[in-house]
Length: 222
Image 1 (cartoon, rainbow, N blue to C red):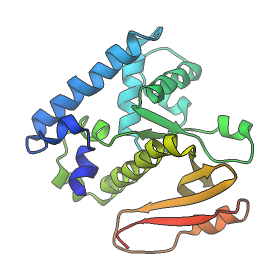
Image 2: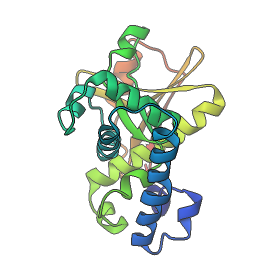
Image 3: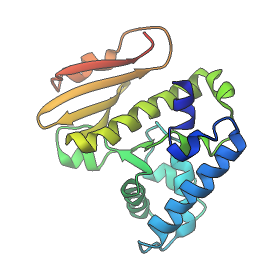
Image 4: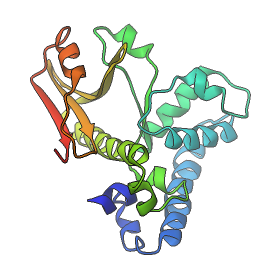
């Protein structure tokens, strides 16, 4: 399971997992670069390819985190606007690379106006971009926790397409739920915990005050 969370499960890279440098090179060159160069740059009209690549790197760096287009723009060394970033994010989504989850809200206007939660659709896209080994990340509870959360979220998003469901996140003041699954009128809330402690999930109770869920699910070792 830990290998799957770290290496991401791309079939072509599985046999290279015992040679991390070769595995990284494969993911970067054969998967990421091919997807960006052939699936996006050759098929869409991209005015700022450098900006597209920088957004990809940032989205992987901030995988599992909620960050506005405005704040992302402040870290990109290229003149542009939030509309361009939103368009590029949609292209990443269409190429099955990165999803920008919307906040679950009662109406479409609030959903569209929310800051996206950046979710690489395979954890290999995150780990191939850094120099930390599986052992190093496993020893860092915060970094490992984000990777576990992204791994669970990527699975939900990938499966949701087949199930006719939609995946969101939810946050209100200091309360947050990692993922909200909506299928028709039914809702389920999912919280991902990578540690051994069970603990409570106060976000569930707060979310129930405005939206009734069919299931509340805690994913983790507890």
